[in-house]
Image (cartoon, rainbow, N blue to C red; front, side):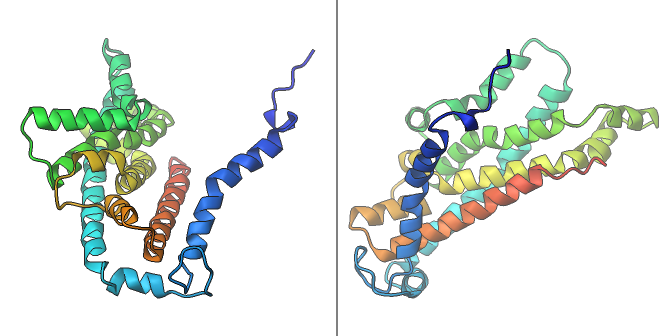
Length: 268
């Protein structure tokens, strides 16, 4: 007797899927639509306009948001680059390092930040910085972002490396290449789609982070998510919807690129 394991055929699956999709994406659609609203009211539609996108770059709050954007992008680039380098080294050691006693604990330690609630990580990071007397500011945000971006960069790199047979490296070493040469000229280029995908994922995670950043940032240092939150506390304005829409669009583009890059097969 065969058992039907296709959940799509279960009663109510399609309806539940549509409900979940609506709950997830309807608010994003509303925010995006009202970012083009000509009216200053966030509840009254006044026609289509780009005035709030212009306001982001030339309005009274433009200097604050531009500085926050500089902080966000510089932190995201540095954090993603550093995290990707560490993740690449870790994946090489765990996947290609053979069997050793601490292999499983090492893998669990790297992926632990994904499973731990972000608020717990934020509090723990804040306590750590306070305990060592590290003054909160730009550097505390950067260090915290590097730490929690590592597992996001690691997973695509590990998945890519596991899909590469070690026969490529063995063939190179049979042709008198050293292990370092086999890694640099054979394995590393084959890993590149996973590395790029890991970098993009770490970049967007760092760029969009609010909870950890809000805990470890110092006075006067803002990123885009914390600057948006600060403005919302003073009242929801249409220019906030414009900034949110731009961040959302960038996130969608980066995640889409990361997905397609991870699917790229350059082993043929």
